[in-house]
Length: 223
Image: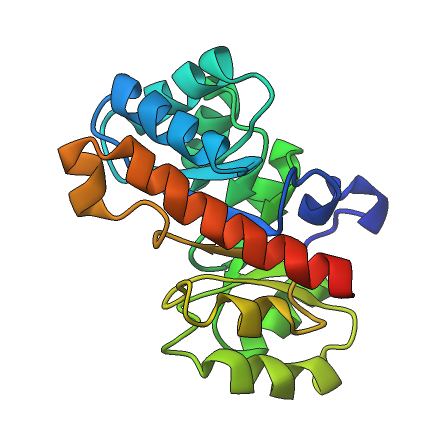
């Protein structure tokens, strides 16, 4: 277990997320494409985005978005190592998200000092993160790991833990996920379909974002 004191932990991701409780993924082949996606999402009411490190230009995309849209909260996803965390921070990332958790990766992200959500899929992984003092995690892949029913079951066991479910979320079930008391934000790629990105259909992406924003805001108002 890490010897780092709890007081060393970065700020909670929930404390910095901007806009509705949505964290759409941006996967871009060029910095210009990343900026176009971010602008389309922002026009639809999105305040926070996660740029996944799955392309060679992802880090440059983070830097470009930060410069073009300073009001947008921009994080880095698919963090798999300490070098990924450091590179993302140097590129301007304001938070980190990983698809999985290991002691070494958790300690690297804690050391990085940015708000972050480590990926978990099982009770044991959640317990490991909790041992480090972490109370916000990414539940991935949500749809293959039990989805809403699993999150409901986990709520009674891990009463202090909040989740960012990602994987299999869309407009059809977004409200169901966001209505769960242990979900603080929902992430995924459904607002940025690869076909729309490739075709440059920015207005359609803005429309999807606006629809999701309306769903999230309605739930927040009803809470």
